Length: 178
Image 1 (cartoon, rainbow, N blue to C red):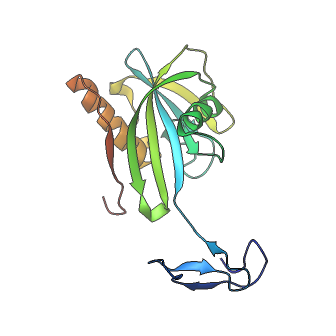
Image 2: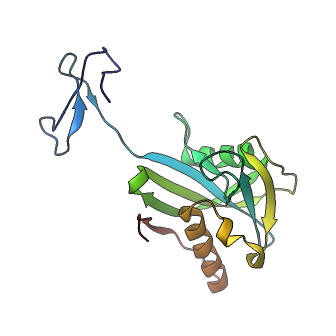
């Protein structure tokens, strides 16, 4: 960041008074420009023991499988974002259940949240960001073709919890070298 989005002046990078981290500061208008992690929100849609996955039509990881998810928009709740992303990517209608995983991805400045969800019907199809959409049984999940570690981590937790007969909230961190 080089210029202030409020007044166009050049920015300095230092610790503001009363803060503990360096930030982009505008000495002309006094605005502190905070850069915070982005929220990626999605759903783990279920139908009679099967999981709905989308094959990505966009980068990053075009052609790989993922749960329907994307960046949260201003003015929406996390629940609204999960429902919207599922509709956009899979043309699928879901009923959200519990917030299931929260995975920090600090090296990308993101936090991924996935809700367990129940598909309301089998009327789904690929949206503009998906090449195809398919229900997978546990045995058929394309593990080596999953787009992101947050997705594989969420799926592994889900399958472990399903086998144990109890779903519980999971949180963690996806590190660069894990």
